[in-house]
Image (cartoon, rainbow, N blue to C red; front, top):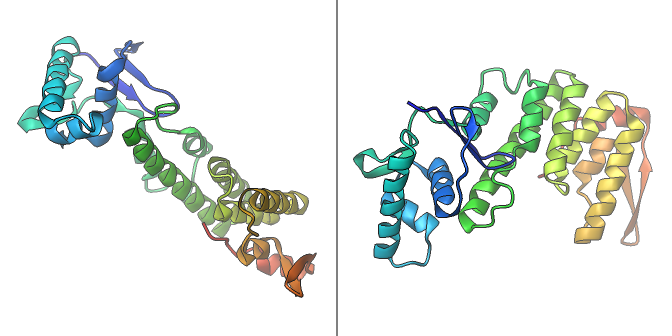
Length: 255
């Protein structure tokens, strides 16, 4: 039996016995869609991949393509009990990432390799179908939540390096996500990098103002140890004492 692998993260690739298998068009969408949505009924997969078509037409095309895949790529798909799914033996990189991030010590003792995988694991980059955008956003939110959880846990254990790596990776995925930048600021302060912490705060503030017209929340400023003094509706920031830096470093910004 051939060994199949499906790669959805960073790039699309279908591999059989270690060798890439060229696949395109509807067949490529079929394999990717079943990988993400399966096990699912034929009707559900047809609606996912062929929206807007008459149900009879979409079901006919789907069943014909599934039959061709079953004959030309044995061991890849499983359509038993009228449900479409990958065969149980097929390897999927997304499944491996989810399993690694759900491990008993994945958050508490996060390995640099896991942080790097979470940072770079964009789902099906370049694919623009509506269903791919939906699943890509779900995976993006999972990556962000896991990286921020690693950063928070690392801060609790005074592991500034891991906290900074996780928070920096999260901020790279979502450049305007305030909670990630607040965690990064806290990690930098914990590691004694006050100058970089201030730079991260001001860089985020300027980018947020430029793109949204809004100021960061007080929680972000508190993570750095800055206070806002208001004068007639305006405001200016002043650094607090070293003692305030230490107490403010535990404050987390919103998401």
